[in-house]
Length: 258
Ligand SMILES: Nc1ncnc2c1ncn2[C@@H]1O[C@H](COP(=O)(O)OP(=O)(O)OP(=O)(O)O)[C@@H](O)[C@H]1O
Ligand SMILES: [Mg+2]
Image (tube, rainbow, N blue to C red; front, side, top):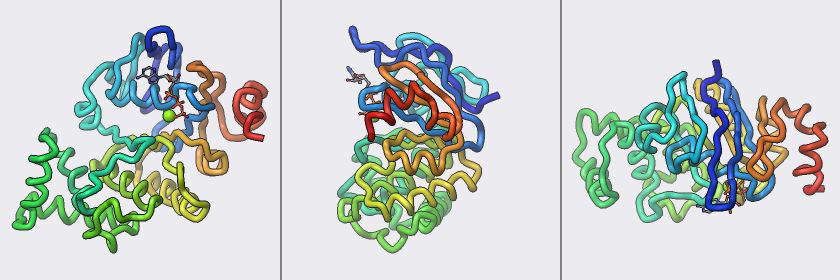
């Protein structure tokens, strides 16, 4: 059984059917790609799986449990973490504080960002569980080679490193399934190469990865399975070779690239 799957998932915004009748699956321990032209419905599908939006119809299952329409914090607690197409960091907070917040979410306490900030700041006098959050956050920063920046404001990081910091924060919640929405967007070729290696290392930690990406080199290199959306509909699903040779995909997407 797939780790995650949807059945006939549909999300309509008035007359626009952003996601239309999509049956989609992610296999455990895979790196799976979700591709398609701009406006194909990729982010909407992410939002409807992660609880940031509610489907018009259809169902979502994670580990054989139906999670359709559950709130985002509950889905996060079940073990799905995500990053966003537009980076969402606490830009004025330090790199370390941004990751500590990710750890904090794992404990399940919901707080306003102001209270959260105070809680993080109070870790200056840390002990017990708080110390554990600090230590684990430092470990995740080391995993992403960001520990040297830990006391910098997030906004001072190079762009590619900000994207990695967002992934670090998601990983700090110790997800089973990690969703990345265009992780390589805005990265230079060196940053993209490093990101590919990082995503492979994340999978080696036992985490399943689902990523939306327009960078075909990245997608074809690291994904074992790829699903293609076009105008909200799933038009293909298969391994990179099958996707590359699929005439519908070439017409809808890859053809336009060239
Ligand atoms: N909140 C919303 N209200 C109305 N329409 C929306 C909303 N969110 C998305 N849409 C529409 O749904 C369609 C799919 O958008 P979505 O952002 O999911 O595409 P995408 O595949 O992620 O595109 P991109 O590659 O540009 O990020 C688009 O036509 C978009 O305008
Ligand atoms: Mg999108």
